[in-house]
Length: 181
Image: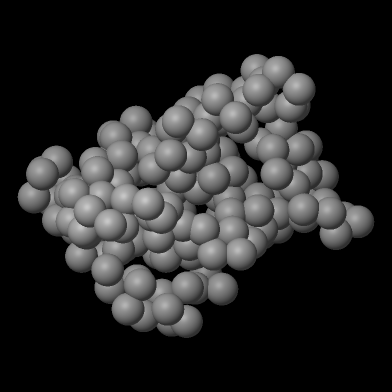
């Protein structure tokens, strides 16, 4: 579901902030890419969207390693969507909350040896190659995300610093706009 339709003011907040950071501060003038990142941020405000991928039994998959296995079990658009989600998931955590990677990759988890950046780039590239007329334009953005993963992760980190800078001091006691259960 496109969260920009169900949460328009939140989407507008992220769209403005993303445009400011990427275009003004980083010099990245790529409206489709900036829009994709804005939608991703608005979508991932909800914790259930971050962990949207489920296995065939309906269990929520919380690790990239599990998602990779699930992607291999799917075909066509379903496979594309899992790979796209892996890219979004790894980009979100690598860019917005890199300090969480230590917890996500602790030794007791399957993701212990997973390189989120490399898997994110690979997942976006795979998703971009699964063709369909309905998502041709998005496939171009996914390919750019694969090639510009580090820049986008850096930009999302800058975006987080910008919204934290704009928050009043008392807001420091509560987490950022994430996560709504």
